[in-house]
Picture 1 (spheres, helix red, strand yellow):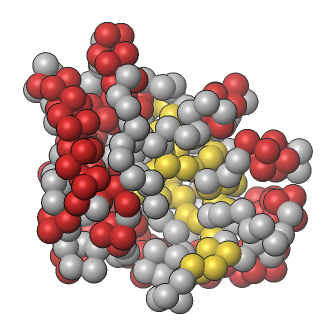
Picture 2 (tube, rainbow, N blue to C red):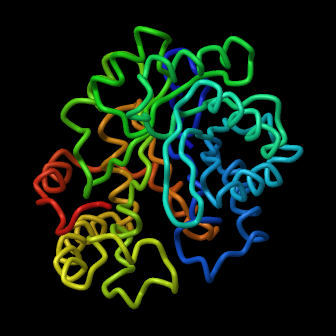
Length: 315
């Protein structure tokens, strides 16, 4: 696979990584299969998709344990990313960006991941009750101790990113970015490019919408988290399917799927932009990796740029 660098002076990673959240959390819980998921993580390494992304809140905790098992004996081949600062009690999410909590969260993550360090540790969300400088200072201490090789911010504003950089270098930003979610495209994404910061795109397929596999709420499994998302309401799905048809028509010119086109569009935004699509199926993993070789023409990129926003908020 084509490669890039994870931030200024960071490790070499495949142009497409692997997000593991859906293996253990939020998406289609009735069809979880840890055995299959373990093989998908290992297959990703074989294919060059060596950036493996998880978080302590996925499960919570069980996804990190799964990734730790998958990387046993393979840790050196992976560029491992996890996150802390969000808690989930089965009913609601809460934020905790206090320095003492972030330290304990990373140390617990290392135990679950069966490693003495992660390559990238994200503040999963900025806690509005804790100045970002305080949270970031705590993470910088963990870098100094060798427990994290680099640190990043997830879903942060440009102001928060700038403030954090005054305390310690930002290796990466991770936020939702796709043909269907472009809110960071005008400020944070170009700022990252200007300052040698990797931009990891979570939900690069619009939580699956851009795969073209969802046309009705009934297509979602029981207790699937996406059933609560406005874009997956019946009226929204019908409208958004027409946008996917445009993406599909571009793919047909290349014998590519809509998902591959959506990933190729992201790759065209800059070498520092790294999609991390999630899947628990080897076939879809392989298709995602193949998207790294798909080159869209300037005319096709313009056609995709012109797509209107989808119907419904992203969350």
